[in-house]
Image 1 (tube, rainbow, N blue to C red):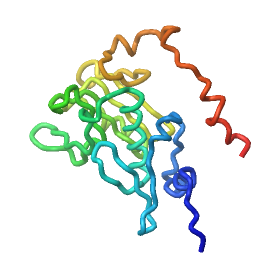
Image 2 (image 1 turned 90 degrees about the vertical axis):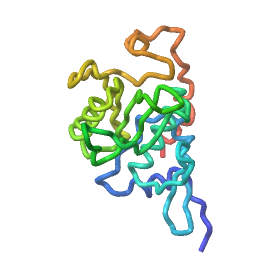
Image 3 (image 1 turned 180 degrees about the horizontal axis):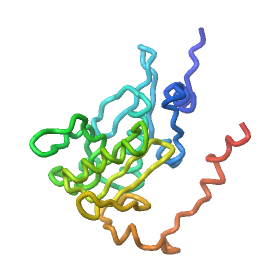
Image 4 (image 1 turned 135 degrees about the horizontal axis):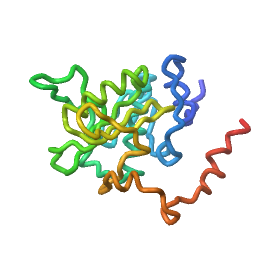
Length: 204
């Protein structure tokens, strides 16, 4: 038996093999994909390294997408790791929600004021958004996201039970004016990467 070391692409194919959960990963950039650390352990299961818990986590589809979202928050939006938490219990009135929030970004290092709540890979957008909205209302958070790998929906809580779809989540130190502002020419990022490795597999 050969000791073939599987590529990241082969591992992702194994993780997302079930047709019912095989969401694409099209919303993530090459940089976010490159930051994903996957490895096969002796139990023949795949694990992903989590930058927040600093532990290896079983690389199920939902967990893999969560780690890609964390890479986006840290590497693309520059939110400090110290302000991000996973599996956060959400208080709804006098009790806690039955399911913890997948990702919460806080305004400060002490993690007292939630800033962004993100839910990953719900069965469908309607269920996922309803849950996200309930979390946003309960915590008073203005920004929320629902991501399944193929689709991403970002929400602004204008007031309780009133939500607006926005184009993206705020980067660190940004507010709603930055998000709503038309993109200026100086802010455009070069797209030379798109002509390189990203589309090199199109002939595969």
